Length: 180
Image (tube, rainbow, N blue to C red; front, side):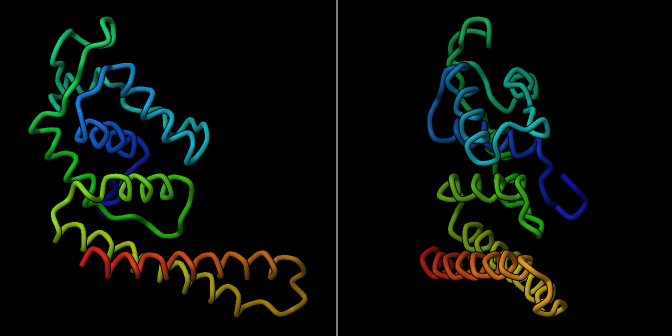
């Protein structure tokens, strides 16, 4: 985690694994496939996302085998109390602007597991995401104001990015009302 309480890429992988196990016990291979599939569908293959091996989560006491030992026998795994606490810490972390591939993954993981938080933490996370998107929109709008019409296709591209950001902000504001 960075000093500003935002997640680093390997923590996004931990969040994916712990969140998946918070929903139900899973076999080792099933968990590894779930994490790989989700992350690759959101950001594509990435060396930044070479995740924490499931074995390390076992050694750290965040997950434990219900039956078997680990990878070698495709053990059935469950999240531990320490894993639940780590999941809570990861879910309540901040997200940085601007939205890049890693932040998109973190936001998608927060949306996937938002229901696991209590009402107060859920509301706080959505409020934080709204604030981050508002900062993103302000940054893009400021950039747009800096260029005149001679900027070529850049302004067309920037205008569509601003429109997409406004739409995202509208969706998250609606979510604020639904979780509140």
